Length: 185
Image 1 (cartoon, rainbow, N blue to C red):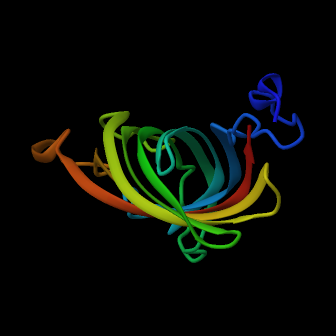
Image 2: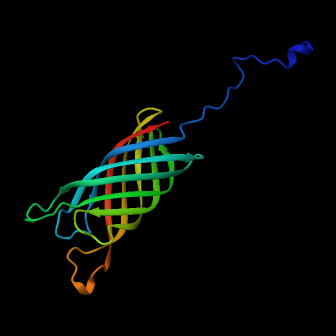
Image 3: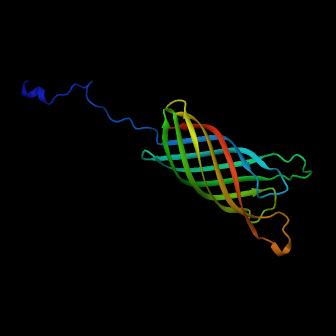
């Protein structure tokens, strides 16, 4: 082989730059939350949840989510159920991995705040935290459907507290579930 041809590479056979996958994902879905902090009301609330995640490496993510629940469900026999609402804003780490072909799983922990409205709760916004997990099924490289569940703990006073217990908080753990669409970019 001539000396000038030794260093040449066929451009079609040369390895190209590695294709980097999407680094961000946005999730939006329909959500349900158990309503434990308002005892004489609905058993749960339906609403919506939105989250944004950023990948750092193959398995680690940092996620931020916000949700709002306002449509009451359950306990149709209570005459005055009130008009409770919940919204939360949480951030935290997540671990995700492919389980089988298009199916992947995620587990996460979250910290932030929760607000219960419409019921004169004290405090109006409580420190909140929780943990959860879920499954996602990839429809394409960019889109997936996702099902998640978590438990979020917060502390609010009971409605209509007597003067002795005024502003005394009670920790509650609300189970929540969400189903929606993921977009990756």
